[in-house]
Amino acid sequence: MRRITVALALLAVLGLPLGLLLGPTTPAHAGVDDFRFSSMDAKYSLSTDADGHSTLRTVETLVAEFPESNQNHGIRRTLVDSYDGHPTGLRIQSVTDQNGTPREYTVDEGTEVTIRDDEFVHGRQVYVLTYTQQNVTLPKSSSGNDEFYWDVNGTDWAQPFDRVTATVTVSPSLADALTGDVAAAQGTQGSTKSAAIERTGDRTVTASARNLAAHENLTLAIGFTAGTFTPRAGGVFDSPWPILSLVGALIALAGLIAAVALRRGRLADAPGRPTIVAEYRPPAGVGVVFAGHFLRRTATAAELLALAVDGHLRLVEKPGKGKPKFALEFVTADGVDDDGLVFLHALFGDPLVPGKERDVVSKNKNAITRIQSLYSGLPARAVREGYRRPIHARTVAAVLVPVAVGGLAGLVFGIVSVVTVFGGFWPVLAIPVAVIALAIAPVLVIRRPLTAKGAELRDQLRGLEVYIKQAEADRLAYLQSPEGAERMRPSDGDQSGELADPRLSLGDASWLRLNEKLLPWAALVGEQKRWSRELGEHYEEGGSQPEWYAGHTAFTPAVFASSIGGFSTSTTSSFSAMNGGSTGGVSSGGGGGGGGGGGV
Image (tube, rainbow, N blue to C red; front, side, top):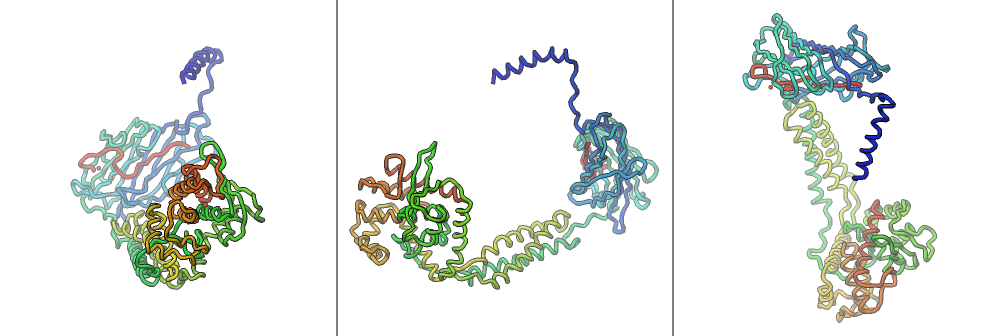
């Protein structure tokens, strides 16, 4: 860093004489905001409508002084469409020059007026904007009088103004309501520096300020007797939107209550076992993929381990920088179940060639698609095989149609109510009610309830999870107990009868084979690291290692456990796609209107 600093310093010193020899360089291109306004004159016509609400017609004349260089195409005028939290119904009527000739303009987000000429503009340019608003007055909290409290140019201009003038003319019907209280301020936001203000006749008030710097504003306030203007009505019954939002939310809430009742009754799962009993063997005829559906677990790593343990593929660990990399080597498809066959074809393609390898971390869109298709078909498969009841379309529609209609109405009309400031607290309440109903009701009723057969399978799997999560000594003690011995029957998948011997010990080959067969199931419930560590210890004690695993270092329990854990993590990652007032003082920027702008 020091060398770079010294080099830059030398370059600056050497470059100075060179710059003097070559002469002055071309000045940098100035920004579009680098100009000024010689004046802004705002003429306000304040009146009331038939209902007594205040109305305002504004004519702004802005005189911009642009440089002679090709810098600007025009100006931006940012207007304000709200006053003290409620909308003012801003409507832009025209944009012209001083002669009344229309100028091209665009409006973004309802308030950003961009007046842009296709060609560059130079020197003095005049922009005249005419727009209307309503509900631009408020009761004054300290005295109870009404007032018109307005920012003229606003504090968001990056340009200085040589002069800003505001002239307010009230309608004849409002002349007698004027209290005579007037005030004006100038400066940055919050400034109380006085500005010039005077009354002309019975209906006109003029305020002015000179030499306003960038972000300085002129504000004026005029007092009226209390009740001169009808306040903007923002109650629940002053607009149809709050009522519609509340009705919609109530309908959605009723649908949600019905969904809860259905979920606890007609759509409830079969009760299953009253007590979960530890199971040392998986349910007969059920693989880890199908089991994962009932346990709500991702089964990809578990299925690959099952294929390895059953001799259909080998897990090959390869050296690499940092964490080891893993590859899968196809061995045979003999005796593989349907789920395993899908995995094998997804991984190794067609045809299946013994010895073919696939890198675990390399993502294959076709493989992911085929495996995802297997997963997405599990709910329907559970119905076909009698583990779940099908979705009852009429029941679902009877609940979700009212929830959808009511919820969307509550949400949409609630948002409209909040934006237009009607209804107070009620639309704010209706919106979350609608959202909650829309989110939860489908989850409650769009389901395939477990049958008695499905509940039994679920509880068997939970029992297996209980067994797997026990400490090894506790598992062995369970199998040696009368209850465990009773459950160890040769007919449950141990054709040799070897596992039916209640005299199992930690050094038995049968104990090793039992734990090896359960490794995929341990991975299914997240216990693969602990299980593989214990399994590795038994391999080491017996002087052997699994045929389905090939490491690149000497076999130890710790290395084996780390490899299995790393394989599970890599597999999951690789296949993740699947699975203020006039009488009490006035400050700049404290009123309505104002805004800002800049150059374009």
